[in-house]
Image 1: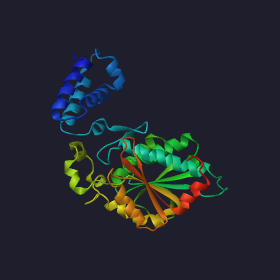
Image 2: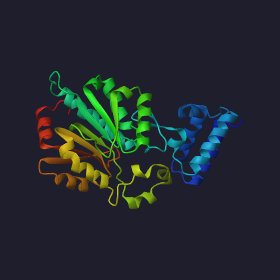
Image 3: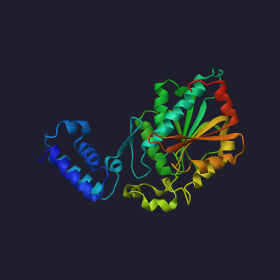
Image 4: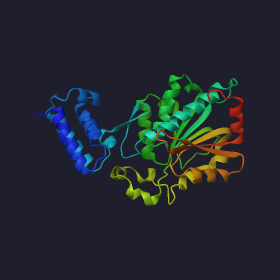
Length: 309
């Protein structure tokens, strides 16, 4: 019976040969999944024997990873914002940089709820997550707001053009006990209706010509969730054009973009009129990642009631 250390060493060697840039982490995650233990437990007990069934599952997982399949799809889950989400080929795997989108969404909601008293009977804040995929951003925001006792004052809508992705998002909402607090809609970008106070969007922004050069793991993900057209901005462009009617006067749109797309997105926003502003925020790696788009009315309101900011 092989030990944890022996299986990890052989797995790391195989994955390095296959071209994995994170062979050690991959092997630890896959073995932990196979035996039903955390990575830290494996690392702490390298001498522990691994049973035949777990070894067989680990071997099958290694074969899949050697073929380029993402670890998240093999395990069936991905950690995001401190939560575990079910993932499969129905939707894009949540990326760490998208956690910035959730954090800023929390700040925006908190500012609106705390900076000035809301009149009794005023409708709840309307939030929409466009291109929700696994539902990670919308669900993480709902969980955070529930912890802060703010969720009752917010209406969150998760939208995607893919019925399969929406099915996965609903499953994740049930798993995190917020299914009754979220609404879901299948739509091309935004459904018709009242404007939103906060629009979140992590839309496809990879230029079509760059798709084939992505790491092989990306080839297992839905191309629909990656391909942003010739310049990567086809869908972002359409969303920006819809903002005058889709965004409330004092609302804010938070758009995740490619690290080199800030100037182009700024130009798109400038084309809406001089009352519109666009500020691009860096992610934790220092790359421009999140565009904050709003009208002058929102800027004025922020100045009058700085609140959480």
